[in-house]
Image (tube, rainbow, N blue to C red; front, top):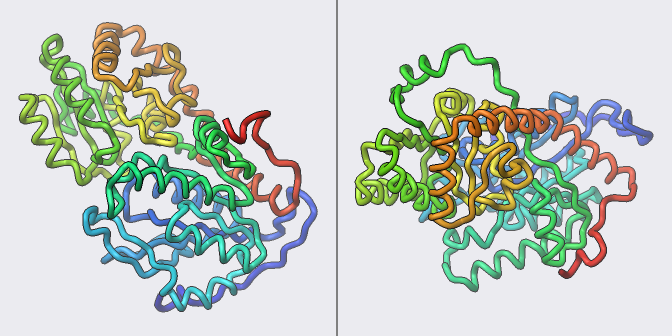
Length: 418
């Protein structure tokens, strides 16, 4: 840390009483292993919650890994020394234990809530800090860790099971767990998590009215004017199940030879996916767009006809909500991260995690323009009820209940050990 970042800001008085308890500001510490400039759903979630909590008049301090050549533009951002992940170079592993300067600084910031977004690395550090400072400790369960075992040094079913088990044990040490969807809440209950759980999704920013028509957008972005255009947005990673999507496109080309799949994003699996596209002889039907800044993805949503999302590893799938908010119909694989937002046959289409079912649903949608239109309309209505601002207000209300103890939701009968 250098310069003004080390300066201790004045801590305002805190007086208990009601919704106006936060006389000037509530001071919140976010602890994370993923943050900007890394571009993924978790980093976007943290950025959006921090932004809207600040707009509501509160102070959010973000403690995240240090990335090479990263200049922070967000206020109150502090960086832990970190190591790059040797097999996944865009990621960095924070090392809180050696952040001597931060150890001295943090207790002087006047934090009233400590909120960690990971159970490992920064998680135990944040928990110990919360206990030492005597403030509430909150944990958001962002990740289904059993789907991410290939990021561990030792890849095995045992390693995946251990990571999952430890994440549930960590959740039980929190004063409050935030689940992005009710499916995640049910999963936590079924694995013995008895800590209070609140369901608060990461909201989306309402899109601005389009300034260009779909035809104009397609010309500007170099998207074919004719034929159905499918879109995937997200990381190109093993847990995203993108092989299923490419094989589905290969099968569909027999019926719709002019189909185009746009793949927006980057990741460690890009080269293997490009090789698979070549092997399937669909290179001319699949365009790997590469990374697009989050604020510019809206144009790609509006240029497409159908959003396709094969991942089963999401706890929410923020890009699904974004696509719906832009009026784009969605076909997703059924998972805990999509079922809260998509009612199959009403606000979108949900396929089983099987290639034949995904292909069947995709072909049916390409032949049924009326359903595509209906899903787009109903999906947009649903997405617009889940704004980032509304989610931030709900999170703030949970903080208030922690600071002024009330009865928080508890598992239903039999929920602890099903």
